[in-house]
Image (cartoon, rainbow, N blue to C red; front, side, top):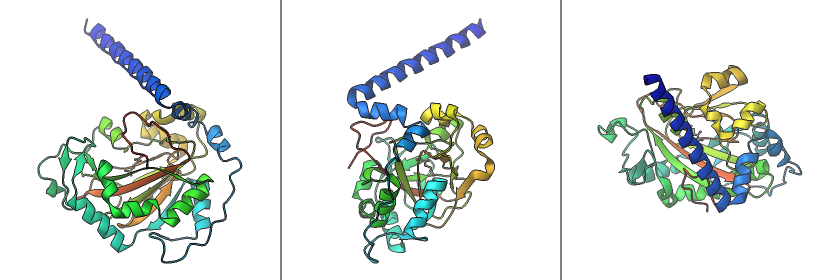
Length: 318
Ligand SMILES: O=C(O)CCC(=O)C(=O)O
């Protein structure tokens, strides 16, 4: 009798999933057919490769020193080579004034716990105790209020960032969105890890896109280091391509076995370190296990502006 009930529950959950799947797809189809198509087609390496056809290394006007906000550890051509071969490049730097300005903004503006726009909190320092006793908070984003942060506005137009994006995307980059996000030291359940991007996954936001990440707090292995699997932006098993973003439902161990532990790169570094990656490359954040909160800024650029976006995210396209 009990077995029958659990089977019924499973069947009910499966039915719920199918209804949700049909409803969201109908929504995408109605709102923006090009987004609907991209969502299905951009999961295939072949389609992504085709979007590179005709893409040439653009010769860019020389960047005048002093006119840009960020610095690079390597020449621009090496950054693009590294992105093409590995899917990521680490070695962007914010200066101290920029780090301070973002931190001042973060400590003086409310953010939204667990990305819930009805749950405002203020983080006063990287010390988790400042959050008080509310341990139910896994992460907190500034959502759209980050638009008031001057440094983020400057970074959206930074000539080095735009040049890297232009080189990799092969055309004028379209700014998609940014996110300024605190992660707090707290063990997460499996389902929470998925929501916090702490399982291996890929983002399919366009036929080609590029994400810039900046640590605003020091990040060691224990403080929520970002990981990626080298080369997976170009080479992926067909069955994993078919999964699209549902790749995140595969166990990390399974993904590691397929793509090789030796290809996993962990990015650690001081506040101000930046890195850029093709978000189709398999990547994840990791648990903040130390004694500091982690603050991470992301900016994403793509090829097109879509009228809609994944239904669970409310994004503003500039
Ligand atoms: O928190 C991180 O380092 C990873 C974030 C991420 O993977 C994402 O937002 O897609």
